[in-house]
Image 1: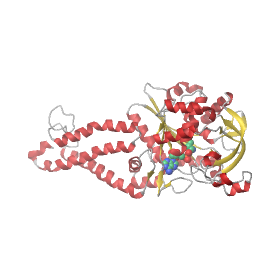
Image 2: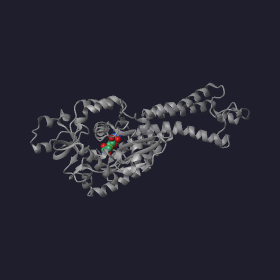
Image 3: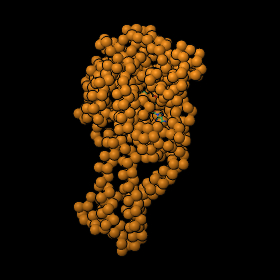
Image 4: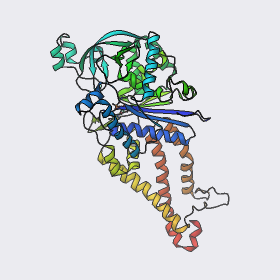
Length: 476
Ligand code: ME8
């Protein structure tokens, strides 16, 4: 719990990750990007709340626990510590680590669900259709166009459905056929409101490619969404019908409200100050949940909508999406041991354009490490420290030239100094513009322009030679 301060609140979140396996480079990527933003906003003087955590309920997690001979509660506890250890190792500065099994979260979920039920946004129906377990996503037949089974298969042929299911349009894995009594959220009723909302808030979804994708999806027509599971026990029971648990995505999205005190009468002031969030960081795989379902849920209960959702691309290894379930995911721990934590963080923010897919490889990581970190940055730091130690008694000397000097080079008439000075002076604005656009690689490139220019300046002036010649020592 935090008390409102007189600073502006900056509330940012990562997705909460499924605890079906240990954290990997993909989940670490989103978390590192959000962490860099949290640190940057703190430096700017905002009162930051940086939230990350775990999505612990649902069929997928329950099945992962069963496959490992654990009951779900013991399984999620064991994996929660592996996430916490990894985030600590990677210097993630989150303010809260939420778990959907936390008691305050169950309260928030039940309160929000009850409000939707009371306002008739939830009704009882039955669902029959395809479900992707790894993504915990329902797919309508219209989404599966081109899929052989759906076009040619006999819908009543249970055995054929089992043996020859269509593949998930998102992750390419076989779908399951589900027949269940469920409760539904009237998502279709919010189609026009959503389109109008996107129109009025052109910055809500970034980057633009994702915005266009969401717009055409919503324009194509929305179906009501099944929001409960009668056959999944590992979840939060619905307040008005305890034989159903909340659909894991509905449960998960509400975490963003729980963390700032939704439905907790002792935290009303905090909630009013923190909500809505400034930014939800997500991967492009979960954009529909965050840009369609989530704003509709919030609007239905009269809550304001977050300012932005920014979806980054996938990290690819050898051209394929890296993922826990595919087993082609490298371990953050291994890479951090080889490249150091900062080397690791630097590579992902510098080498992949945030918002686009990015191929990652060992060779590229070694190249960045040697070229940017050891060579440019390492040389600069070691030269500066050596010279300050050797020639300036360990204290940063005043700039050359006049008494009023602010310590920056370029006070004297030399052209190289003036160039260096102008790069240094323009740096903050360049970084600010880049960070406002979530363009981490551009921010780092701006910083590296200064690093390289300083190295060039040092090489040209060769102060180590000047220092050897007592007659020129004051030009240092
Ligand atoms: O979707 N490249 O959890 P999840 C880049 N529990 N990012 C990747 C990635 C890759 N190859 N693989 C995963 C869920 N990610 C839900 C979220 S939020 C209310 C609920 C990152 O464990 C990326 O951020 O499957 C992606 O959106 C997220 O992990 C999916 O994590």
